Image (cartoon, rainbow, N blue to C red; front, side):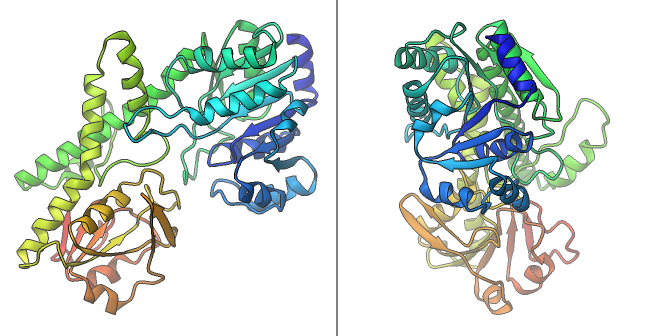
Length: 437
């Protein structure tokens, strides 16, 4: 089976399936198709299926013309009918793995996808999970589902592995194609075959590890590392504010050290599809082993508390002008979880707005990338433009995402006071009405 599949990879004869056409799945499907593999994308959201089949791109990291060309050439199509899994030889699972209301892993999308695959799984198929999850998911959850549902045997009739997604929306250098890939699979043959498949598509290194659990854990290590260091930066920001020290200047000075230091920056919290989630996956899993992840959980507590800290600092600023939070007009600038993207998943700005409104503030927002959003059952529409009249009318401007296309000099010149949580106004010369996090 291994030699047959390797030959088909070499000749680009495999049909590829990608389940989940979001920030991870669609770029992966596009790269597979660009490498010459006929690719079918699967998604339960009909609007995504219709958009792909019309050649309309909705993901920032995908080039519009690439998608349209691949669809026109018949190399890429999409469907919500999972029976077409029977036609594919390689299937990647790229579905969300969020947290539930109790901050525990919600792997229902992974489970449902695995059950659908099992119904149509045929011999000599490769199945790879890319969704971030806790160590053990591939072997303890997916493998039994696939074997039980298909009647096939893993390693004998099909190959199964884990290769964590590495997607950084808005990154101008590293995209799906040139980001190194990690592969861990069940058995040496599966590892070799899956690594060969990714190597045939990507320009980057493919690093193999001994088991899926190693690959699952390394993904959590990547993001726990970032979560912990961001928490350190956030705690330093709190301490520096109390001591009257500019934390941003401190970090810039520390960056001059050529070894032993990597700069991380404070902010209103952490967002995105990985960093706010992964530490909780590990914390949940380690309870099986009677261990609590002290450092990791503490970092999450610090980062999760930052939206409330921003609201507290905002209240103190308004108090200086004899204004309470209740009834104050507040304008939030930038609600995406990072600069220059439209992604609001777990964005701390949404928590800041909700907390301000909970205190009775009247909150508007401006974000050129996010015209409207829904959060916790309610919807909100942003301002279409920033005018002098709008800036002059509000009691406080809070910057929560440092979008590069915004005229911060204009904001400084016309706003009464600005609380900059991202150092977005660092190039602005006049600073009498600016306070940094």
